[in-house]
Length: 339
Image 1 (cartoon, rainbow, N blue to C red):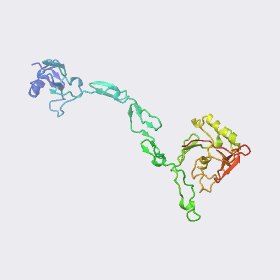
Image 2 (cartoon, helix red, strand yellow):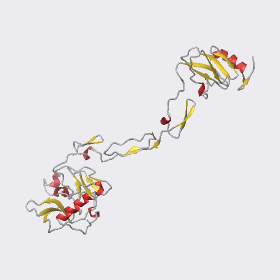
Image 3 (cartoon, rainbow, N blue to C red):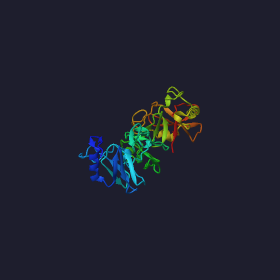
């Protein structure tokens, strides 16, 4: 027997040892080629090896090309430098099924002995803000730092009864008679003592950050700073007809993206008054509006007893007055929406 020095071992010694381990499968190991019998074509064979015959390591998976050998031939010959034994298994071992699109870019892995670079986009943290239309979640790897933006105001009490927003069913009932805001009583069973009516939602006002504010009690959207609108400074007073024209012009200009701005009716403007407030204007505590104090504002409601007059609201007190549309002047405050 020829002695060939290989990996620190004589081939003769290796063959003798292998004959005791798996000689039933090994036919020869010469000139760097291993030949073994294929007793069962249904098996997947792998050539195992280890650094030396006394090492406790069972086998190394470095040579992936020597795994999952399957053929109908009666014998198999493969090129190897050294080996420990040939093992057959009814199931393949170490077969990777991942595709580049399954691996995050630019990470690399070895699949079936081949280096593969991932193509999956690395999204990192995806942030989603719910809206009125469905949004696609970007495909790719997400590192868990993203989030869906929440809204603390999304409560049943802030949603009209019969409506549902993102799974929250509304319980708020639009009352015909809300609370006036007065909390101080001056005799038995007066408004301040009884405080009849429905309380407003909390928070009541939503500042959209685009110059508009929504009152969740009425679902009316108001211009946050009406006297910041071009042509409507605090120095400007309108007749009723001209004030109507100005509010309609705000609609035509698509202020904040809306084209249905108008002059509020008397009940809409009066709905902002807090009759328990001593502030001027007498608006609810914490309101976000920028309006002029102590001055009358027109409403779109005509006085039924004399149609040449219309109702006005004094913001400092909530007082209602009737004045002639063409002879008297007041300020205007555009509004939109409502039930």
